[in-house]
Length: 361
Image 1 (spheres, rainbow, N blue to C red):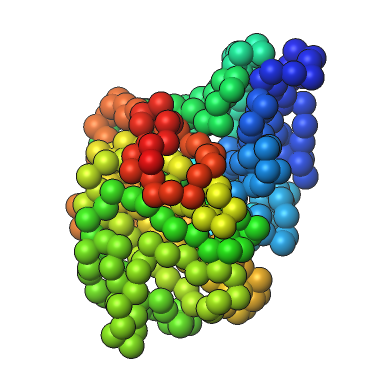
Image 2 (cartoon, rainbow, N blue to C red):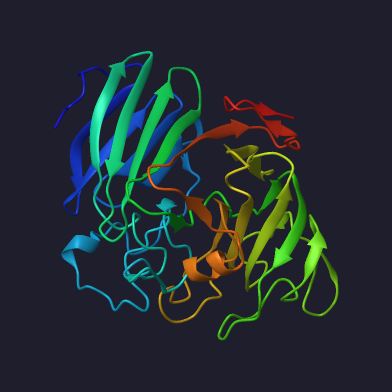
């Protein structure tokens, strides 16, 4: 364990903290504070823009709880929802509900988002700080490596990640970045900018009403149609209290790899740059106005998630393999990717986010 080099200025980093027994890494500079749960999937549970003291991410009322201290859930659901605290989850190899693959069973969004990772501080200077994280999952023969880096003077979190198939056989996977936004960032509503051509609306599901858009429909982004047949601008997130509705949709046919979500009244936004050749879909999950009753939300959830994913839809790995959207890795093959998450000020429309995380209007 490293305390980091003691100082009260410039970039800082420490892995000396724990939350409910989970090792935690904190990276910060003069603009950002990023808190990472090493002991639970490297969840990013805080992405705070310091000049406004605003955390963009969803934070659930139950707080941060350690899945390795609790009761193991049944394989049909898995403990993901039991211990979901919001934030940003790295999900692999199964996206969605219970699924089986080559004899392995996965619950909801299993398995790397729930297990402890290893970490090391590899750079600790006032100009920049870097942490490296790595894990070998329990049920699949993958080796996942990730670095996170902050540099002075930039509100950009740099993430570089790779997955190695250490098996002696071909493997399939789904890989997603489950980024969920919440209050107070969404209190006044928001606008989404994304270079997508299509909006694909998920199927009707039991106990998943009322919907924002007519299920099983496809439209030209950002256009949608309500269940009553009225046109809807899907790029507009309504303010808290304006509506009670939920939705599972997908942005598809991406022409570039980025999105931005902006609170125009607060003049603040969050942007994410990613590789759209790998992450070919943005899953668009909405739970607005505390609409969802019963387990696990109990009428206290207001969130929008914009999640780059390799695969579609949220039906689990078996379905992604069947429809040809699962990633295929040969024995020994490696896939690498980079993401740049940025906090920015400005209410005007975002036209691009460059590979280094620069927001363009």
